[in-house]
Structures are given as structure tokens and as C-alpha cells.
Length: 153
Image (cartoon, rainbow, N blue to C red):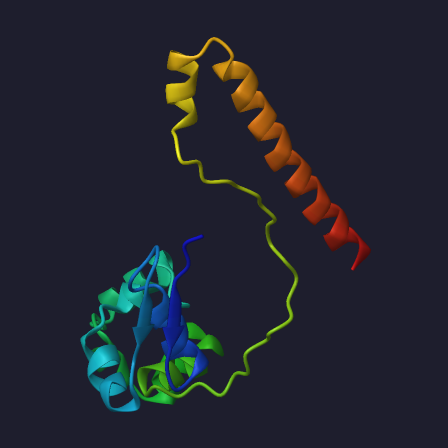
């Protein structure tokens, strides 16, 4: 299973770090690296700033984290509403939101890795299709068990 993780001094920076070495990497942003990281980051790369907001920021001359950091909290609230307070904080590497360890699961899956590509089995053996169906049925059973376990919790 591949996974990416980010580690830093707060939730915002950890989230930014988690997106850096996808699909299978660990990124650490140390406290002493945080300032240069956010200052050099293009505004559209900031977690929580979508395409439309990034466009509006660019129209206001905000292209990087350094540009965002130059704006006052009052100015950002005037331009973006109450979310402007969040933008003000993240530009300064401030984020006191807590991490929610228990949250609603968004997906459930099951998979398997095989020593031999199942498509090769289809080409080599007459019963390759039967083998593939058997393996898919096992994966489906695993998924079903996981779904049922999640429903009971």
C-alpha cells in the first residue's frame, strides 16, 4: 500500500508537506524551514486556496506566500470575508486547529498484489480466466467484510 505523510509544527504545514512527495513519500518541514517554504510557495499551492480564490489573489498582486504575508488581516478580511483571517494566519505559519484523529471514513477498498500479472495468466493458460475470477472473488469478499465491519462500528 502506498501512502504519503507530512510532518511539521502545525496542521496546515503538515498538510502541505503530505502533498509534496506523492504517492509514496514522507516530507518533513522543520520549524526553521517553515518561513522559506511558505514564502516561496505559489499561492495556488496553498491548501485551502482554490482556483477561484487564487485567481482573485493574483489579480490583487498576491502570487506567493511572501506576497500574502505582506497583507494585513483587515485587508484580507475585507477582500475575502472571514476566511481572510485563516489566510492571514497560514501566511505567517500559524494554525492552532487540532488534528481530528477519528473522522468519518471516506472510502473502503481491497486489493491484492500478485507475483505474476494476471493478464499473463490469461494468455498462457486456458483456465487463466477462471483463476482471475477466483482471485477477484477473494478481493470482493475482503471488501465485503470490511464494509460490514464498518457498518457495525
